[in-house]
Length: 233
Image (cartoon, rainbow, N blue to C red; front, side):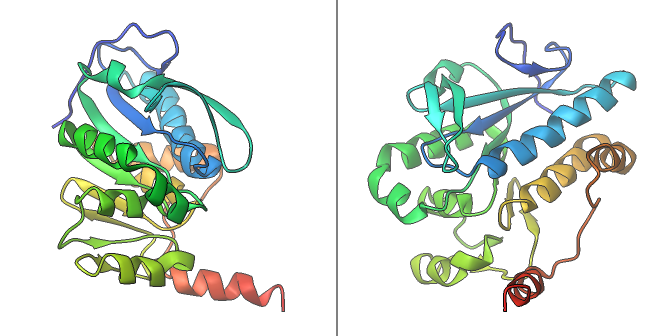
């Protein structure tokens, strides 16, 4: 079942807002740029295909605690809405990017975790990319679940959240309304799976072809890390 919204926000991008599913990207300082934009591009590309097929698409919104410009870890600045301005919006999908500075983020942003917990409670599904899994765990959303995160922070995650089962191999995992993914570009794999859940395999495959990416990679995250490391030895 999809949750729909009506919006007249000119900063949003997507298909007909009367039919679209609202996807809110949860932005914060030093978030990973591709964690955010990889998934955004999947939904953006899906909108073109869905519109051509006269099917409901997505309204994409990027929100942060204070609104305004938010600088990513890579230095690019992203414009955002204030999260509290979306209080009346029915959120279909809440997506949380990761950050290479996850320790500092967790230590300095209790308000961020509280806001995430609140927004998730009124979302149909909550999604994390890369180390965004840490934020979901800190918000108490992952207890007893099996999850994925970036292989580089796997040891830290297991020490910090022993009540959560970490699958070190998975590219992405769905556990009910919670979806988590491995590092960085795995957010694209995850977003393709979300589109498939909403609109079917054919639409998702068309999106992958349009983006010139794999439709689905195997769950061998550790192997990916080993293969890449071998190129530098």
